[in-house]
Length: 301
Image (cartoon, rainbow, N blue to C red; front, side, top):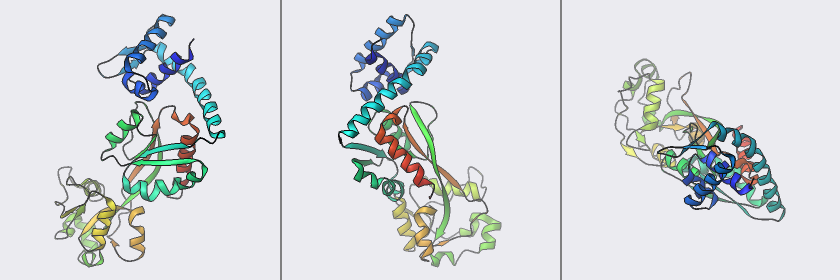
């Protein structure tokens, strides 16, 4: 059986789409379709059911993928090892929110630059955009809080992010801790809110988890909207109001007394970060090395 046909088949099986597989393989969509038809004729069985959006493997297709994929991945690892031995420069394309990439991911991966790697980053505005780019081969690794369900991805939990309600000392002095525990967000009346988006994603999640508000009850409209958590932090430090921020981002400012955490709940709101790659791509040595390094670094986060 032609290895090129099997390689194309596994790419389609993992991508769930002839079009996405074509982009990953550097082939045209008609070429991919033709190769799958040839393989199906050779086997005498259909490998995929064609859908309006993408394809779904048949039972025969799933069985063939389970048998063929590990061997193709092993061949890919051999090829990668030869490239590394030859000193080939390996480029890693990473996508995710700018704050987390800048403060967590890139510092953890920086030592790889001395090992023959180069790094490229992208900051998509939405998780869906980042995952679409990963499926299309524009990114190698995506860091996101949106866990993909199925599809052509492998997602691994990276770390949990704790959220705090913080304010500058001036505004914190107006908050009665006992009233905040008893009356919830009513104790914050009159204190401006700083957020990353008009939809108040962080504050709404915090209000729901900590104050147990009705789903229709929303925090007050933001006084300042800045689409970068680092800008939100600087606004809070400068006295613009209160904000919900991840602890990793604001811990230094807390330790320095520049901002104050308002009374913390017994169980703080958490958000999980995931490392997402295309299925099978960890056979690439440089990607597997970066993936492992991030998982090891996250133990300290």
